[in-house]
Amino acid sequence: MFQQIDRLLSPVRQLYEVLRDLARLAVPMIVAVAITIACVQTTRLYGFQIWSISMRGWIETAEQFERDRDAERAAHRQTKIDYRNAQIEAARLESQRLDRVRTEQQEITDAVEADYSASLADARTRAERLREDLRTRSTARSAADPISVPSLSAAGAGTSAAAENTRLPSGTEQLERDLIATEQAIQLDALIDWVKRQAAVQVSGPEVRRSD
Image (cartoon, rainbow, N blue to C red; front, side, top):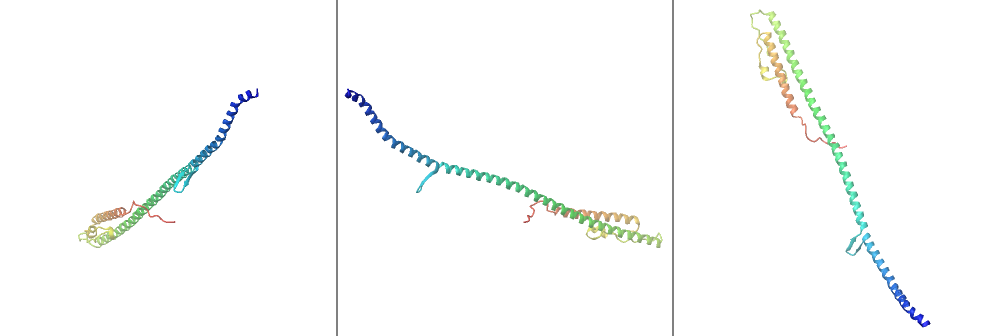
């Protein structure tokens, strides 16, 4: 009876022994596989370097991508800042240029007007003296005597050569006509001088940047 039971249990024991042997073999294999997977995963994450052989891991790659992204964003922000600063500087230089041009043009206008007024006043003063001289001579002489009238000319650079060399004949009417011609010559010379000096003003070009 015991022999029959033993024969019945013998295959079970054999199967148990086989499974036990397999388990003994499987544990080292599972450990080896786990270690291998861990090494591979660690290498993929952190990389490795053996002598001249190296491989970059995912973590280092991600960090490099992050650094590149941050550097690109910083460069973009700096570009925008530089662009705004350049616009501000350009506006400042343009304002300085316009102020300079307006100032120089106004100075020229004021100077030409002052010269014109002075020359015109001088011509009118001398014309008035000639009128007085004519009246005095007219009273002292008879109406038949010829009256020699001095020349009326514009003062300084504001008088044309033709006006300076004109000799007024006798008579108040000629004196007035000569005064009008002289005034026109002074006005024309002042206008020419104003145009030349205005044309010489530099209205374009970079302004000189002053260091703080």
